[in-house]
Length: 199
Image (tube, rainbow, N blue to C red; front, side, top):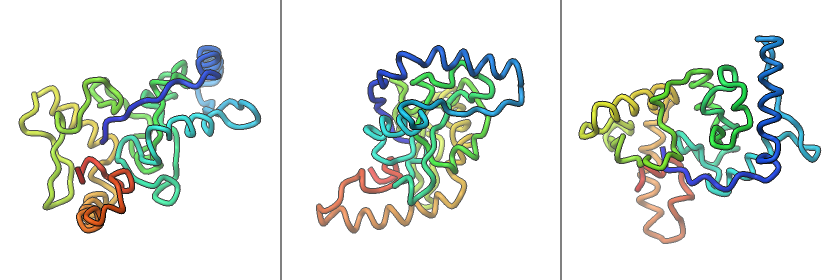
């Protein structure tokens, strides 16, 4: 999980997120089974506008597994860090929204724990919580981290399935390819998935 630099909140969202959140909460209270549907802004679903804004920093990488490029790699989605089913008023809150692949989103579903790591948190760095195992391709909990930080890392690996879906094997393949191609100076780190594993 790479550190994520959150871009500025789109102006239209800043003006309307509270009202839209209240409306979704009221809808859920009236019908607890009501599904979340994105509002429309300028004839386009709001999530499409927000994906464009987040991609300024994400560069087509998933904010959690760092899969790339979203689209060919896996379907590009918007993840509610605090699930909209449990926190309906946060449905349009900018800090609660991340660009995400459908595999990470499907694995996390409506799970949430306050210990879950947030990639745009000021104190977050990969090395504080995790280490890379270059034999297995897995992300592991940093044994030098505090007990609290180790727990946060464990929860994050589990909730987003960071060592599932064939990801360890994919990381090893990308690591070998990166080491071969990077020497040509024709490729940059952002051209690869799993950047935290390649650095």
